[in-house]
Image (cartoon, rainbow over all chains, first blue to last red; front, side):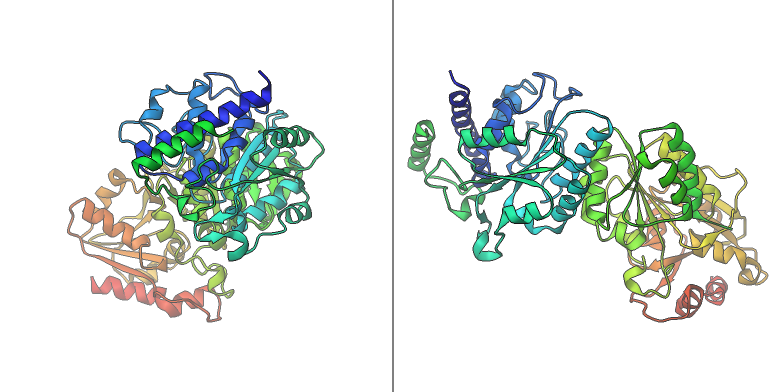
Length: 274
Length: 304
């Protein structure tokens, strides 16, 4: 089976698995979790990351930070698949008996940084990246942020710092699904042109269809260099991708509840998602 | 008389020479002692730009990578400006980072309220996992430097801007967190930092013939209950003196302890009125004018 097809199958499995977790917990942030699925699938299953099965504390691992903490749960099935905690935990997501929370924290094996409040991940990631340089380690740090985090000033503090210190081992992925809680970012406070802003700060930029396995794989391959520049991959995505009930609907930032018919429909849809 | 920051950085310099995991981050804040650190230990010094928020997040990442990180900036900016970073990145993950905050109270007079730290203690006390120290002399600063290196934890060291005398000769226990400078009868003043040293320099006039105790509570959080309890029991009345607005500050912390220990001592608080200070005249004049003069403390003592 080709790598491309393997990743596609992992992405489909992730959506199905996560949908069942949302259903059980009746809470969470499906819009943002579904928009980043291909990004995480390529990162974890596309040969991008260095990791060791069953050992989340392996010293030579690359780091992943989901700075948009409300979407951290999108990693849980992957981390379980990597042998970091038992699969049974997924069934207990969001319950009083399990270890898996709506927002991730460092008590969960494989979660590197406690996140939740926006725009901390890239600063902490810069700390990882700077330390790796100091330690002469070739470990990389990948930070997934939502485009909404670009409204926070600290993002740009980090952007300046990472560029000045030539942190080419820091790779930021912006999940640009265009929606924040109250609507489309371009209607509310425009963020465009995103790439130009990052380039002006001295970053290498790559813009991709954030649901295209090929384009994401290609961007991560291109970003794998030591040219002295931090990297940002602007991944244009669809909020709620994969569920026609959720797609492009800002209210599905939060779990909204579904009728039995809608649940059956969505399960079929997620199974059939190409 | 020496600056607390120079004492601290000189000590850290010696420690850092032998411990390559020590990193010193500055948000564009200097000191004569830091010039030597920057030159001799350039690999362990990092200027982050005037970016306190990024500095704290960065420090978290470095601490998670096994580094002993010190972050350094002017008091109001390394506390309230980045309070959320202190909470989310350091406190929530309980990371061993030492925050060095310089310029307490009206220390930067006559700069005005943007540069004063008159609300920071109340804010810092509310942050979970955050240890807070306000050393009142230079010898405790040396001990704190060693503590932060030997037992790294999330701590804020509130250092004064002004030069300070050495008050102690190796007779202070940093773990105890409190030290009785002067034993007295019936009434004691509890304080810390510049205002404590300022009172101690005028102690004879301030006491006006009375035998008053003076207690240095240099560890503001957590207050060592075993350490402070005998001192609270010893005195009938307690007066707290702080260079902070009173809401949630030093006096509040002593009131909390008295209440938690089930004691009944009256505690009277002297501090800055809840307002911002735009007046000129220098720090001591402002303190004299706005309620922290020697006469004000003496009057409070007489009223006990």
